[in-house]
Structures are given as structure tokens and as C-alpha cells.
Length: 182
Image 1 (tube, one colour):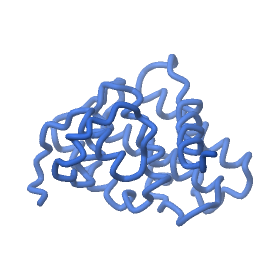
Image 2 (cartoon, rainbow, N blue to C red):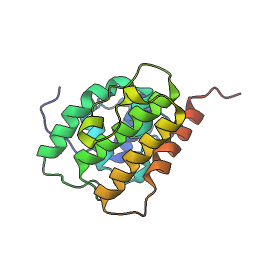
Image 3 (cartoon, rainbow, N blue to C red):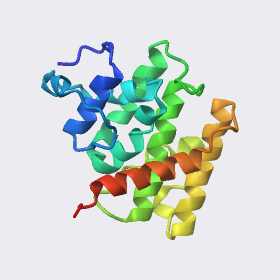
Image 4 (spheres, rainbow, N blue to C red):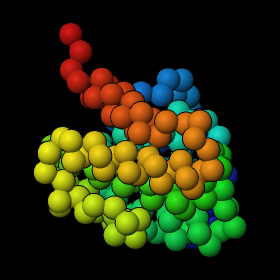
């Protein structure tokens, strides 16, 4: 049951929940954590975006690609983050913005992959970006991901992190773990 409050969510619990969902790219799952009550999707999304471990936070992109149904929970999580008094994620951008940006990057990446059910384009208009329905080529998708990255860098107030490469790296990680192994 979800009462609206965000319980303390450790990175171990987040990694265990991701593992339960089939995302096993973060090592070190504590087997005991797998037996705890499952996290409400909003708690998982908020916990990931607020994690101080970059690898855990960046798991948002593979989560949206692997479990597109989590996209319906993004507006609720964004709303909660906006109202909860948690203005900054661990990497200095407003937490609600960070979640929107990771989600929008996943929308464009998924559009370029043309596999699985499409993620609903929730934020391109609000961010002043090209709608996903207008992404026709891999070059369009790449330009759209770069545009998200530019906004992310601006809102984080830092040019140190290459956000476009960060998003793409998560796609590489996801693809490697999702592919069959000999």
C-alpha cells in the first residue's frame, strides 16, 4: 500500500528491486533484500533519482527501456519530488527535473531502437524539445538525446558530466545484460 510518504530507500533495496524486475546490471544484490516487500513504483523512481550513487541513479534509463509500464508512474513521482522539499538530486539538478530528463532521454532512445511498446512522450513540449513522433532517423534520435543532455547540463549547472554519453552508456549496459549469453 502506498500512503504517499517516501520511506527511507537504501541503494541495496533499490538494486534488489531492479534485480526483481530483471535488471541485474548492478552487482552485489543482497539476497535478503529480495525477500522484502516490493517497492511502490513511485518509491523506486524517487529512490533512484535521489541516490548518491551515479550507477544507481543512471539505472533509470534501463528501467524505462526494460519496463516501459513504469512510465505511467513518472508524473506522480515528478509531482511528489516537486512537493516533497527535495529540490536537488545528488548531482545538483532539481530532482523532479532530473527524473523528467532521464525519462525523456529514454523516450528518444526507445524511439531510435524501434523495439517494444513505445514510451509515452510526456515532457518534450514542456522542455521545448522535438516530439518523439517526429523522430524519423537515428540522426534525429541522436540530436534529440543531445538536446536533452544540453538541458540536463544547464539545469545541473555543470558541464563536467557528458549527459548524452551517460544516457548512451546505460543503453549499452542494458543491451549487454539483455542479450543472451553463450
